[in-house]
Image 1 (cartoon, helix red, strand yellow):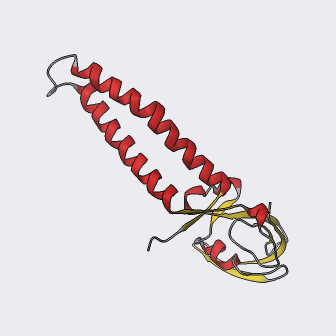
Image 2 (spheres, rainbow, N blue to C red):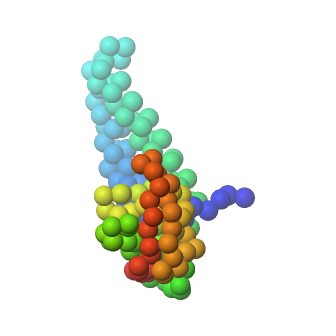
Length: 157
């Protein structure tokens, strides 16, 4: 049985867009570059040919990777969720020990963007939040030590 990988709608759309771009723009461009490099003659010392073949290998590998991820993903729309507990795709507001508010959305591994407040469900904070409720206090072990947060708001947006 194939293990499903949770992903938000936004993350799924981003992977689909990258796959489409690789298949319909990058792949044909690299094939054309290989053909042009072949036309220059001796392939053994043709840097353009070797660079294009290396790029082609990268593109084909990334296409396979994306197709595999997309085929295994379980798309979760946070707007279809509700309840009192923190679930995958929820946006959570936390107060740290100095009452500074931080906001995170819990997303899939391929969607992580810490600067944008998107953290993985398997990250230390993500794991500590899943299943918790408004008002709960959590302790998160990070490389910088233990940090404590209080859950001040849960949104499904």
